Image 1: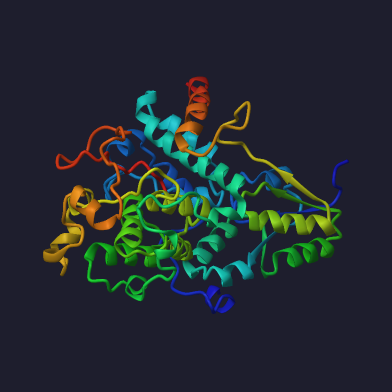
Image 2: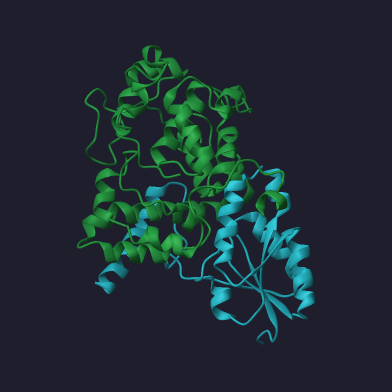
Length: 273
Length: 146
């Protein structure tokens, strides 16, 4: 039916089902405590509720109440409630910004001018043939399922903007073509947070970080493993990627645990797409 | 004055059974329109369309595609409706559609239950500012439910 009605639309249907029944199956699995412990890992206990919340199949209020029911004390649910807060915050920002959500909210803090970033998404990224197993893997998941773990979204966005020097808007628009939860509020402002036009500093990562939270699965089979662009310390990457020093040591960590011993950079996975 | 014979316009931000327009007007004919301009201009993939379609199948709605405003007005006309009921939308595109519908046919917007109800508009700009104000209020309902 959809093929006939929308011949111009690309790709196949997602294995993630829409509708109330699918949403209820998913919401029954909520576990605030496990979420807090494991959410930064690609195989962590994330909720997968974002497509249903985005389209109002579930309201944030319903999910909030489901979290409350799944916990025995406030500590167990604080992380997940915090993430629902992010969603509410993005929506309020969108209400305030309107169409200006498409604009850079602030200047880049990378030392590069906004005009120096490419406005086109490179073909190798769109086609998933960059030679980087992680990024091609994320692209495959994005295009085939319409969903990506938040950490994968962050890594991919950081790579596009800071390594490939693509303007965040080109990447953000591409994500919206595919993401079932695609929402300019969460999506565009998170891309801007990565890019540093909606934060005090750019977000970037290194191989150590990606390997840890992806279980090392990509690096094992990566043809670029011996010349990985992410295989460096944060200090080295900072010098390579940015035209001005980005203070990485003066920002207090917003969360504890899972921190790399090799860097003082706080674990940055606090942002939600 | 209440609307006597309204239709319901369901949009992409409220494809659930808790849609306040569907809840309050269960007898009114309801419509969802795939926004062809949006789909074409944003290159929306079939995955997203399929997901929206499956969400619609769970709801008592007629499904159309094309120009949203024209389709909603034609649907209202077909049922001799004296107004359109819908739910609040954040997306500017949907707000523009609502404003255009309202020029030809009265549009009533109903709001669902909010995530958090704050006594005054919170300070935005950065999440931390907003959350300082919102977090204690969100958790009040945990205490209430516990």
